[in-house]
Image (cartoon, rainbow, N blue to C red):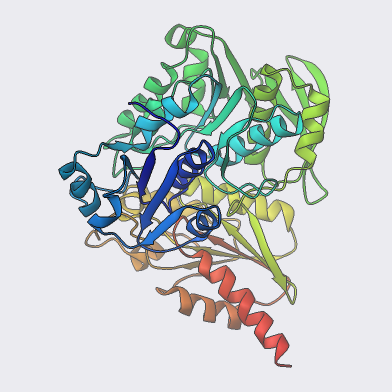
Length: 464
């Protein structure tokens, strides 16, 4: 592949988290960028403001002026724009095909894992920015501190969220890897748990002998790689809370200033205190991983801890969207059992006296079918659970797999099924009483519930 700034590049599915970030990087590197998607969202609107030509819908004509076409993982080989490009001899690439070229010449920090990779990537990036290292970065969601999910910096480091779906992360050339967790996911692509684990094993194998693997010792599968150094055969630094063998540990966790305070111990020596403006044990683990990565690049603990205190979070990662009449509304990306459980634990930790309303939009039929039994205990920290219809994403329906069946599997004393997002909003407006927290968990479009709930509340006040 030959990349030259000034080339015309067209993205099919540009509204997705991964492709929008690559588009932004290539735009900043001097390429002429266009893209198409079924609808508009915050990412396409931001790219339009930055000067990218965005087409709503798909048409063969959109690719005819391009010198290369890049497609999202959801785009099939018979897509009309892909076929049009191929008929004109225009090369078509996936995300994984692009990354090595875009990141060439940098020290590459790749953050992978079933859970926590977006937040961890953002934390690493934020610390390095605060330390004056001006990294380039690609994150799966817009960072609160920078307002974007990707940027080209002048520094030598490139931080990237390494997505396992479609084996995207196999196209990277990492110098440092963080693995937060390995728990079977994406059954539409990985047919078995072993296939999923094997993909991570291959990813670890991309590290050079002088590379560094940063692995969560609290995660059972990740720790297998960390403990079996003969498999990995390269430097490893582990981190954790509960595993006493971890090289870096967080201890004495406590609620503090709207987040979590904890002490960091490195190989038995106390480094100091971190005041993290995020809730939940899972975010403490994410912060530990970021501290190790920053340490590997010469950032002192004092400077890194000071940076963490200023972290403003990520869009749709326990994002407080607003408050009205004693009801706090939060958006979160949680969409599998472990993520849901961690998010609700964080909510209970942060809001111990509130009624917690968990609103969940199941994501994809295959994931829902494969993990159905595991959802039973995921909602224990919620007082009330509302389930909407499944968000299909790239999939076709599976007979017998729907939101109503999910409700039957959830073992909770107060769980209900409301198919449509608008009806769910109406129900919440009538049923929720302060003090309460509404947490909308979705990797699809259920964030609409948060926006509509707050809008209705605001309009009701203005009419008084």
